Amino acid sequence: MTSKKFNLIILGSAGAGKGTQARLLAEKYKMKVIEMGELVRMAAKQKNEKGRLIAWMHKAGMHFPDNFIEELFDQKIKKTDLSRRLLIDGYPRTAGQAWDLERILKKYYSSRPHLALWIKINDQEAIQRLLNRAICSKCGQIFLKRNIKKCPVCGGQVKVRDYDQDKKSIKKRLTWFHQHVIPAIEFYRRRKNLIIINGEQKPEKVFQEIIRKIEKKL
Ligand SMILES: [Zn+2]
Image (cartoon, rainbow, N blue to C red; front, side, top):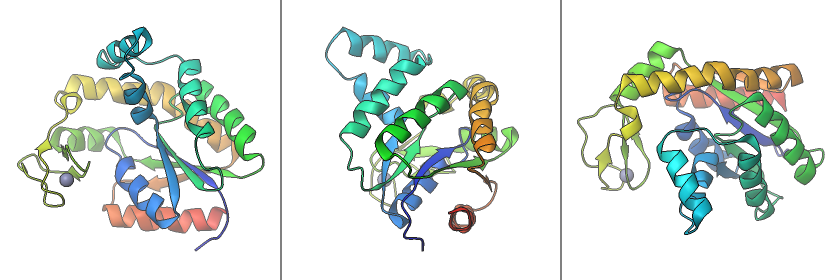
């Protein structure tokens, strides 16, 4: 295994299995994970007007301005141990954010390289997976069947997430991905630090492919 320091950006449409791979990678490379969705949820809990506005926008499924997201990320990095490798999940979501992120990474990590990982699945597969999956409300484990009620890992309650319920909201997320996230992915392709992974394999195969390609790229 490489001893090099690097940061990793994990990209992929909803249902691609980013969360699962992020957990495995964080363990293998001892990475600090920053999950943008979590930062937004925490910001939404602030007991002030800003927090209420964020909560309202989040609930309505609105997208946040790039500079707001950048500020959240910057504040988080400031409190992070910079000697550790970083894994970024859920950011960038637009090409503009890819520029912002690059600027922040340069500011805090000067010359440390970063790689962008795209776990690629087709839309049909994404829709199928999202319509079938359920998630443990306690440990976050994802199940690809909806008939499981109790988590075999931690005993928590397994639930279907609201936004995975209907096809319309799933399609809306996939449309966002094609219109906005793909341009961000192109940004990394041009930087020659993009790694594309076939996400339509079993999670352990996906993980093996990721490790192999990361080690080769470093
Ligand atoms: Zn669980």
